[in-house]
Image (cartoon, rainbow, N blue to C red; front, side):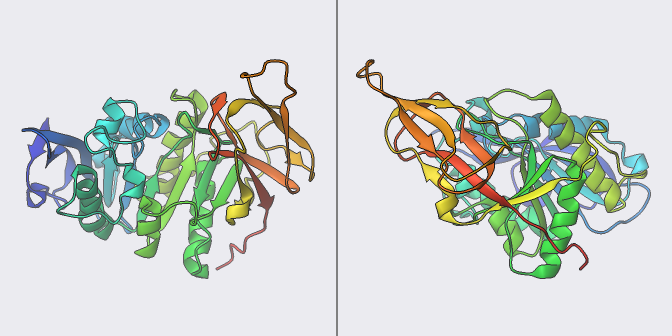
Amino acid sequence: MTRTVYDYSEIDFEKPGKHHYQVAFHLDSNWGYSLVPMTVINGLRGAAEPGVAAIGGTHGNEYEGQVAVKRLCSDLNPEEMRGRLLLIPQLSESACFANSRESPLDGVNMNRAFPGNPRGTVSYRISHFVKTCIFPRVRVVLDIHSGGNEAIFPLCASFHPIPDPIQRSEIAKVAQLFDTPFIFLYSSQMASGLLTDEAEAMGKITIGGEFGFGESTSPKGTLHAYEGIKNVLRHYGLLPGEIVKIDPRRSTPPRFVQAVNLEDYIPCPQNGVWEPTVELGAEVKERDLLGRLHDFSDHSSEPLEIRAHRSGVVAALHFAAQCRKGLTLYVISQEVSLDLSL
């Protein structure tokens, strides 16, 4: 049974077993609530550190995380578990209902709303709840994303290149548990107010990831998200058993690639229809053709050729055919080696 709570203090984070909640955040424009789903599991086999939080639906039009985390809410058995697991399948539940990146209730992108504001609009109040009630109760934060209708990425776990070498090394090790072909170190300069920024700043072992695209539900991406979260639980002792090889057909380890400078994220130079000519994850040389932009206001015109500004690995491409001037058209990353010995 799911219990609706109107005050954070009504959530019992310590009670053994599995308990489902809807956390109510009052609306600003009319009488009603945004009801954020959350499941709290305290394993019946005893304590385990650290606690883990797994979150989907930070953006409403990204579905692999929503589905993977929801399945875990029903599939996991507290009698087999140790320690604490907090599951939120639809953090921005109003955006999820609207199939939107932003909440229709206040127009706010949840992944730009951190650290939140207890007196702000509903998205900022939800963010404040996560920062003050969720993060302090766990040490590991998993925020599962996909490209939505804007971008397409190779299947990857991701994190920021944070300065603390010990925290960074542990994050890199945990990211490998998702068994994705790539692990993407991405720029924290592209935006502010990210959930992962806030968790990292609080010292959490913080993993993001891109597990699909196109406002669909990728079977492969959902599998890696679902089993990857379970691998993290196994790694930290919350679940019994050995780490699972999610993609047994791939024998090579994940490739670490990074795009940490703003110059790695190339904006679209003009409005047009985007015709990519390169595959995600491809290695390209400077000046290689990546795609063409077509201007249909003059159908006889030659397309604008888009060429790589540097050599590297294609880490992202604009997904939708229609691309507006200024949106990121492509990302070129560099393969890196990380010290995982710390």
